[in-house]
Length: 320
Image (cartoon, rainbow, N blue to C red):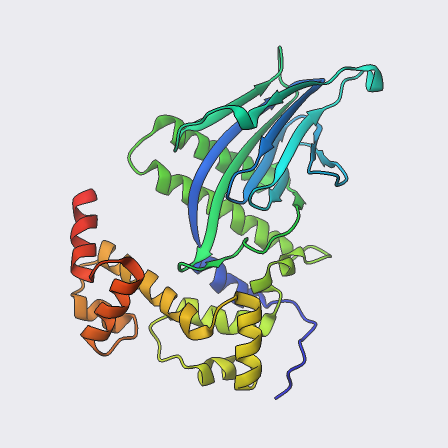
């Protein structure tokens, strides 16, 4: 078997399986209204940010990078902890004086919509900023290795603005399940963004370490689609068309942990989901997660979640 990396991008079918299993956790949603001659400083949140311009024209600036032009339906994704500012230049040009609003110093309540206003009249641009975590299991963060901005220009027909407006409305209404609904809506936008990458000339999706190696992505897709199957290092290496040693080395380099450790995380995520949402017995949940022995399953579950499966099910039944 060859250990040379292929130059072809990840197959659409593999990407589809990875996106289907992606777990998106909602962190915060904000609305930003910026007027002419204003500069709104934001960022520094410990989660990737998705920034979508609903209307108007301006620019988004990260550090000393070139300004990112903002027009209606521009979407920008920034890595976690990124400081940035949104500007709408004055029509007076360089003679205009910037008025700066420091949004980072404004307090915000968990789960609430934060509205940042940097204008003294009608805003020129209106953005929705969503912060999130997108992961597989407990340790594989899809956006964890993102180093710089991703910029995509959508169109009105893509309906991204409608999806994000619905997420805002959910948070404002504070109905039961608003957090889960907001996470589901943010996932729709992330999926639309990653799908768009397949039609992009520069295939920026490969900047994600997990998606940069199609052979490792193929094996990982097998794991996330069927975590309870009888996987082994050898069988996963065969699915990636690599030798065992090359597979383990590349998997650890791309994902950051060994294949079997990641598989255990994926199995424990599936088991927790089954305990919360089904009436399967503990033994059935364990078998679906790939454990023939109840005691082995209970030990692994306790190590991952800090309690045994029965206690986990009872605690989540009380909270619902």
